[in-house]
Amino acid sequence: MSSSSSIDLSRYRSQFPALSMHQDDRPLIFFDNPGGTQVSAGVVEAMQRYLLTANANVHGPFLTSRRTDVVLAEAHGAMADLLNAPSPDEIVFGQNMTSLTFAIARSIGRELHAGDEIVVTALDHDANIAPWLALAERGVQVQCADFHPEDCTLDYVHLASLVNERTKLVAVGLASNAVGTINDLRRVVAMARAVGALVYVDAVQAAPHFPVDVQALGCDFLACSAYKFFGPHQGIVWGKREQLERLQAYKVRPAPNELPSKWETGTQSHEGQAGTLAAIEHIASIGRDHADRYANATRLLEGRRAELRAGMLAIRDYEQVLSRHFLACMHQLPALTLYGIADAQRVAERVPTFAVTLPGWTPQQLSAELAERGIATWAGHYYALTLVERLGQLPSGGMLRIGCAHYNTTAELDTLFAILQELNERGTMRAA
Ligand SMILES: Cc1ncc(COP(=O)(O)O)c(C=O)c1O
Image (cartoon, rainbow, N blue to C red; front, top):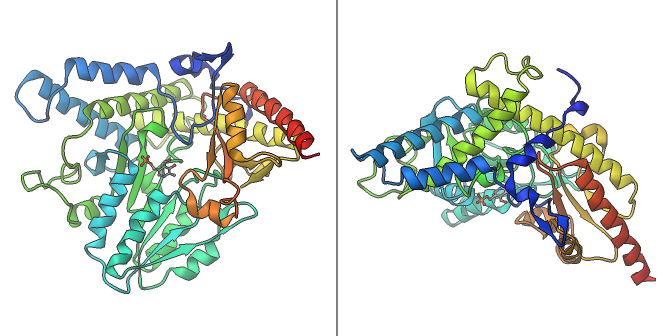
């Protein structure tokens, strides 16, 4: 494989109409990607095409209904390819990751008893904590694994100390939405397997940044959201067939018992699935353009699975260029505090999501100043409530989050840092 430093994905920017918007003659810059990415024109076209030419309920005899069945089958197939899932039947679509996780947790909870334990982590978004905490009503004990505050990596020793024969499930994120840490999932899965516990993975912040392979991870469930990987607002959960078949779903009586319908309650967002399919096609097209570069890494996969893996590897490698650039810029601004991995040698252990604070400014003030200059960021805890609390940043408004996607550029980071530099000087003057 050639060196990752030479890869540049900026040519795909033209496929994202939002990236050509301006505010007061300045091009808009999107660094709120962990909150939600922009969509490609292909996604909008696919949603429009669905609504104009195929809009119907499923399984009817007429043309638009038959077209709907085709689109939904293709969307399940594409998601299975993206996650390298064994079968499209194991892909469940739903409103969003949070709703799907509450639904699965509630069904798992049906089988748990007082004294059973669940382990969550302090690094996670609340969507992979609160649904499990809700089972405390049934007498289930929820334990929380800590992280190392100095680099925001999971404390695997603490996690191991919490996993025991009473543990029925470990809920863990693959990548943090706040500080960007990528967790060593295989290590967590091995701990859970040793005691026969299930593993529920939140991959919402992994799916936009690197290949996610449910078979390689060895987990039981994995959830993500299409609006974080260039698609529409749409949640997805993959579950191992044996778990999805065995667990009892909360559903209406006439709804089928087969997978995945059993879990896809009510009428789905068909246009959302059409858009998700197009977002996946965008990733596959990046893969086709970089097939030679990643031929070695994809040789065991076929067709679209190989293209998607190549596409996600290209995204990962380009985003590591952005991460290294971000960390290099930080050296020019020592007043900025970064929460998370700061070592440029370790960019493979993080996604390009950075949480920072700057003396003299609250995160909300910084975000507002940047917004005035056309730069989108987020300030606060971004629902990673336990993490921000643990870092002691909650009383001061959390942190400013700067999150890159594959359509961001090093030039955009330079613009951001020039403004942060100027704000730092103003902040110092205000304090003096
Ligand atoms: C890591 C993580 N998990 C879960 C969620 C919730 O996803 P959804 O909005 O699809 O419910 C988010 C949303 O920001 C997230 O970043």
